[in-house]
Every structure is written in C-alpha cells, then in structure tokens.
Length: 366
Image (cartoon, rainbow, N blue to C red; front, side, top):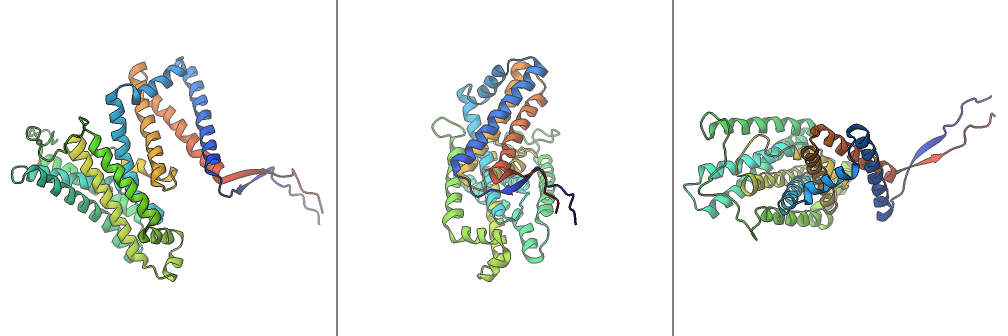
C-alpha cells in the first residue's frame, strides 16, 4: 500500500530543563529583538529618534529622586499582590479575585481611620487597621475557597464575581463617607490629624511600605520553599489524587492557602490606604490584581524572580507615560510599545520550554 502522506517540515518537542543562564539569554535576546522592532515602528510612525524615546522611558523611572521612589513604591505594591496570589497559583487554584480582596482590605483600613479617629490613639488605630485589613482580605478569599473545597465550584468565576461585589461595596461607602458632601468621594482621610497614617522613615514617605513588602517577599519564599505547608501546596498542585494518597487533606490545604492569599491582598490594601493614598476609591488597587497574574506566571511562581518581573512591568508602564508627556504622543502609542515588549518576553517562554526540530520533507513510499 502506497502512502502519499508527507511528513511536516518541523515539529515541536518539549525541552528538558535549561540552565538558568541559557533561559535568561533567550529572554535577553527577545528583549533586544523587541527593542529593535519598537525602534522601527517609532521611526516609521512618529519620525522620532528611537534612542530619544528610549531615553525618555528611562527618565520616567530614574529621571529624578522622586520618580525613583515612586517607581519603588509601585513595584512594592504590585509585588505584594503578586506574592498574595502565588500560593494559590502553585496549588493550581486560580485566584483571580486579588483586586477585590485588596479592595476589601483597603475598605477595612479606611473604616478604621474614619470611625476610630476620635476614639483611639494613633498607634491603636494603625493596629486595628492592620488586623481588620488582613482579616477582611482573608474572609473575602475564604468564601470562594470554602465552596471550592466543599462542592468543587469554579474558583475562577467565583473570585472574579467577588471583585465586582467588592468594587460596589467600596463605591457605596465612598458615598456614605463622602467629603465634601455631594462629591461622592472621600477625599484625604484625617488630613489634619494624620491619624492612621503610617510613619515616615528616613524622610521617605514610601520607605516603610517597601520594607514591609520586602519582609513579606522573604517570608513567602521561605514558606513556599521550606515549610511543610509549602510542600503540601506543591503536592496538591501536581495531583490532588496523589496528595490524598499520601494523606494530605486537600480541602484543608485549599482553604488555608486561599485564606493566606486573601490576607496578603488585604495587607496590600492596608499599605495603599495607610501608607500611600490616605483615601479610598473604587480604583485604588489600579488593576494590580490582574497584572499580578502575569507577574507571578512570568516568574514561575518564584517570589524572588517576581521582584524583577514587577520591576519590568512598572518600568514599562511609567515609561509609556513619560513618552506621552515628553513628545505629545497619544498614550496609546506608549501602550503599543509596552505591549510589543511584553509579547516578545512572554513569547520567549515558548522557546525556553520547547524546541523546534526540522524533519525530512517527506517519507518514502512503501
């Protein structure tokens, strides 16, 4: 019997684990290619010198001392939310509700600042803010975790819907606590007394936030890498059947891990209200709950590498804003350049995990 089928020119095969330096060489090559393509597009579309545009992107983060500290603050906030979702992701429980969990934490902080300002000293208000924010975030994540553990509901949809509920709750209380009346905004809370505001360390407003997130990053790395709970999370993520076979109570691990995830999100909400913004709005988290998914995935759920991926995304975002201001371009152009760079970087993961092998053009007839 003759076979006229011809073999494909190439096929995709799974790679073995690459040494770290080879993996980062591939990512570096992808970044260089992305910059070349962005330069070509910039020249063709705007007639600007690409090097001037890249210099503006750099100045957007490092141009002044203030810009540098704002960069570090934004990295810290994105990293905090990314650390929060990572334990759940390692367990293959897709917690997409970080935005809502951080919002609820922020709401709890603002409530303490508003309702306890004239009843407790500053240090006691900050303690209440911390406890209430962490607990509120944990409860908000614990609700979908309970239904997931007991009835195997879809945690992706459940946590997404919880985001909308949290947003509407915050919007409601922004009207209840509005200042001035009729503005539908809260304004700066305790602007005269600064009750509930985090202390300023070393003359830098954001330093305390950055230090807190650094401690959380180290703690999360140790927890996931060296603790018994971290081991159980990894086993459940690999196979729930195997986890049950070795005696791990999967339902308990799911609930415990989601509670931890929500608690750290609540902490992020606390840092935004008490340490940065000193107010509450439905957009205070600024989409970090969704960006954190990309940060965690790019870093392979490794808290240390998340520092670098958080830096990359924040750096590109601030650079996009800078070129919009400096060159009078539409903000969408900066987002286009950012999207191209991210596309190449994310695409490089394919070549890290897979290799393309050429085959013979055809098979001999039999």
